[in-house]
Structure formats: structure tokens, C-alpha cells
Length: 427
Image (cartoon, rainbow, N blue to C red; front, top):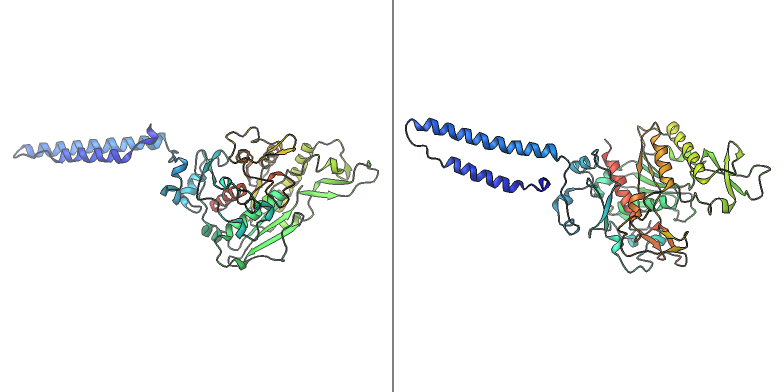
């Protein structure tokens, strides 16, 4: 196979040929000039052949990368050099052939990136090991894109890149999980852990609206705004049916949206609350321009809400300053209409239909239509395999199984590795 061409062997053959040429006797008299000329011809032919073979290899196989078995990953010096911030890895990561979200999970004993029990910003409910989970193989998986390499995480490079910046996450509890993951990952590079603190002294709760953690030694903040629908919750208009107890104003972005504007990195997510159980069953229906839209489906309402979000991004966000990201719908692993939650010991070998979501399609379609650059974090396919990574019954409320949220450390750390790679690739 050409991809496995051994350049060391080629070099050995070249040396042997060269030795043979140089060993030709020069003789005496008039033969000297003739034999010297023969040497030059032979040497030139060999050099031309080597250059031709090498040029043909580069032309036909420009994107071939070293392939490692799972047991080779940890010991490979090439992988060790692949840190976020390394220009060679960034070049590979940014190539047109690289779809970082198309790949597979490979075993890697260098993971996890942090210990949740040593991070004050990791919720106890997501710390599965602390909550009694015995197996730990779910911690040892790294995402490997199919046609390229995801740069390895280097906390010192990332901390320096984030110096003086403001990172903002907006969304639901899955967004808060990514926020917690980012803080815990970055704190591994901070010697004085007391220099990292929530600016208002607030504790993490499921309903808290706003959290802001400051890394004082690098002068940046990582913030979370809870906005599960992204649009405004509203009161009930007059003469509405009795079943309506609240509304979503699909044409109005959440009333805290001004807080998101002056950020350097802005990450959105939404989708998990757009279900009948969270909306219609709770008496919440849709409203547009002050009028009820009782017959509007959840998917169409989500499209309208994202159109409102997109319009806000185009009008309010300075894309020259702010890098904008939208994370697609995160795969869940419920069975039987959310009746059964079985956490496995190993990832699934096939996605089993979990690699697609109508909400992800709507998000991607909305982003493609925007006039400003928004980077998609299309995590739906990669999460589809990770039936082993959910909280399950290993939470602070074990009587309530959970196949939506992820253990920490775990899958959300990979979202942040990809996010860091994009951030560092800027400029």
C-alpha cells in the first residue's frame, strides 16, 4: 500500500547504489574522463528517480496521516506533539477534508482531563464516581475524527489564549454541564485554586439564572446564563383557553439577552425543553405578535424561535470581536418513551438512530442562512455512541434515572476540546 511507503528502506537502497557507483575504478589515461562522466549520469538518474517518486507520493496522497491502533496512542511521539496550539495540528484540523464531528471513540489511558472530586465547580449530581459508579472505563475514551487529528489539549496554551477574555454559555442544564467541564479542565493549569471563584459567591443550583467564574491570574471569566428556550416566557393573553397557563413569545429573545452581547466567545444551545412534557403538559403554548398560536407544532415553534435568535445575532453581535458557536442537540439514550434508562459499560458500536435529531437539523439550517459567521458544534453524531456516559442512577437523586445528562468528567469535555481547537485556530 502506498500509504505505508517506508522512506527509511528507500534511503538504504539509495546509499547502496551510491556506494556501488563510487566504487567504480577510475583507471588511467583517457578512460578517466569517460568514467567520471558515467558516474555523473548514474548519480543524476538516481536522484531524479527519488525526487519523482516522492513528488508523485505527495501529489496522490496529500492527506494521509499516521494511523495508530488504540494501544499505540499513548506512546506515540506524534500524538504527543499534537497539542492545541501546535501549528502542524491546527493546519490538519482546519483542512477542507477535516470534518471533526465524523469519527469514532478510541481508548486512551491518558484520560480523563481532571478529577471532578477536586473541582469545586463540578456538581455532585454529575460526579458519577463519587455517587457510587464502580466501573471507570467511561472516563477513558478520546474522540478521533476520521480524516484528521483533533489537537491535544494543552492547558497552558489555552489559558494564555483566553487571557483578558469573556466566555459566555447560554442555554439549558446541558450548557451548564459544558460550563462546569470547561472550568474544571482549565483549573488543572492553575496553581492557586483560590484565584478561581464565582464573583457573587453563588452556589450552583439547577434553577440559578446566572453564574460568573473569574480566573483572576489570567483576567478572564467563564459565565453561564440559564435560558432553556432562548426566547421570552410571557403571561397569558386575555380570552385564552383555560388550559393555557403560560406562553413562549417566539418573536422575542430572552429578556436577559443584553448580558450576552459584549463577549469574546459566545456558546448557545437549546432543544431539550422543547417537548410536550415541558410545554403543553405544563400549560405552556406559543405566542407571536401578542396572539396565541395554539395549533403551532413544537418543531415549527422551534424554527420560529431560532429565526428570532438569528435575527438578534445579525443585529446585535459584533462578529469581528465575538466568536459565536451553537451546539446541536445532545444525544440521549432513553428507551421506551423515556421509561427506561440503561447505562452501559462500553460505548455502543453503532449509533442506532441516535445520530440524528430534527432539532439539530433546524439549528444547522438556521445557522446556514445567517449573514454572520456562526460555528456549529455538531455533537449529535458523536454522542450517539456514548450510552456509557450518562448519569443514570449515579447522581445525587438516584431514584430518578437520567439518560440525558452526562457524567463529569466525560463527553462534555470533548465538546470543550473541540471548542478550544476552534478558538485557538482563530487568527
